[in-house]
Image (cartoon, rainbow, N blue to C red):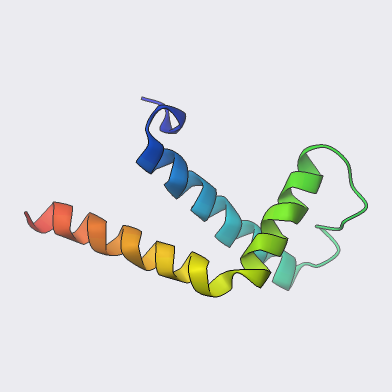
Length: 74
Protein backbone atom coordinates (compact mmCIF):
# COMPACT_ATOMS: atom_id res chain seq x y z
CA UNK A 1 0.00 0.00 0.00
CA UNK A 2 0.98 3.58 -0.45
CA UNK A 3 2.55 5.45 2.45
CA UNK A 4 0.01 8.22 2.02
CA UNK A 5 -2.92 6.07 3.19
CA UNK A 6 -1.54 5.40 6.68
CA UNK A 7 -0.94 8.27 9.08
CA UNK A 8 2.13 6.65 10.63
CA UNK A 9 3.72 5.98 7.25
CA UNK A 10 2.91 9.49 6.04
CA UNK A 11 4.60 10.96 9.14
CA UNK A 12 7.67 8.80 8.53
CA UNK A 13 7.80 9.95 4.93
CA UNK A 14 7.63 13.61 5.90
CA UNK A 15 10.33 13.21 8.58
CA UNK A 16 12.54 11.35 6.09
CA UNK A 17 12.09 14.15 3.56
CA UNK A 18 12.91 16.79 6.18
CA UNK A 19 16.10 14.99 7.23
CA UNK A 20 17.22 14.28 3.66
CA UNK A 21 16.63 17.79 2.33
CA UNK A 22 18.33 19.37 5.35
CA UNK A 23 21.36 17.12 4.83
CA UNK A 24 21.51 18.04 1.14
CA UNK A 25 21.23 21.75 1.92
CA UNK A 26 24.09 21.58 4.42
CA UNK A 27 26.44 19.86 1.97
CA UNK A 28 25.24 21.46 -1.29
CA UNK A 29 23.73 24.88 -0.42
CA UNK A 30 23.46 26.02 -4.03
CA UNK A 31 21.06 23.17 -4.86
CA UNK A 32 18.31 24.38 -2.54
CA UNK A 33 17.63 28.12 -2.54
CA UNK A 34 14.66 30.27 -1.57
CA UNK A 35 14.35 31.78 -5.05
CA UNK A 36 12.80 28.72 -6.66
CA UNK A 37 9.15 28.06 -7.40
CA UNK A 38 7.10 24.86 -7.32
CA UNK A 39 8.44 21.64 -5.83
CA UNK A 40 11.96 23.00 -5.20
CA UNK A 41 10.41 25.70 -2.99
CA UNK A 42 8.80 22.90 -0.96
CA UNK A 43 12.26 21.37 -0.53
CA UNK A 44 13.53 24.74 0.70
CA UNK A 45 10.70 24.94 3.23
CA UNK A 46 11.44 21.41 4.44
CA UNK A 47 15.11 22.30 4.89
CA UNK A 48 14.17 25.37 6.95
CA UNK A 49 11.99 23.16 9.17
CA UNK A 50 14.90 20.75 9.56
CA UNK A 51 17.31 23.53 10.52
CA UNK A 52 15.07 25.43 12.93
CA UNK A 53 13.28 22.50 14.57
CA UNK A 54 16.16 20.01 14.55
CA UNK A 55 15.67 18.99 18.19
CA UNK A 56 12.03 18.08 17.59
CA UNK A 57 12.78 16.30 14.33
CA UNK A 58 15.50 14.27 16.07
CA UNK A 59 13.10 13.40 18.89
CA UNK A 60 10.46 12.21 16.42
CA UNK A 61 13.09 10.12 14.59
CA UNK A 62 14.07 8.58 17.93
CA UNK A 63 10.43 7.77 18.72
CA UNK A 64 9.91 6.14 15.32
CA UNK A 65 13.09 4.10 15.80
CA UNK A 66 12.05 2.89 19.25
CA UNK A 67 8.59 2.04 17.95
CA UNK A 68 10.10 0.01 15.11
CA UNK A 69 12.46 -1.85 17.46
CA UNK A 70 9.61 -2.68 19.82
CA UNK A 71 7.51 -4.00 16.94
CA UNK A 72 10.40 -6.23 15.82
CA UNK A 73 11.05 -7.61 19.31
CA UNK A 74 7.42 -8.20 20.26
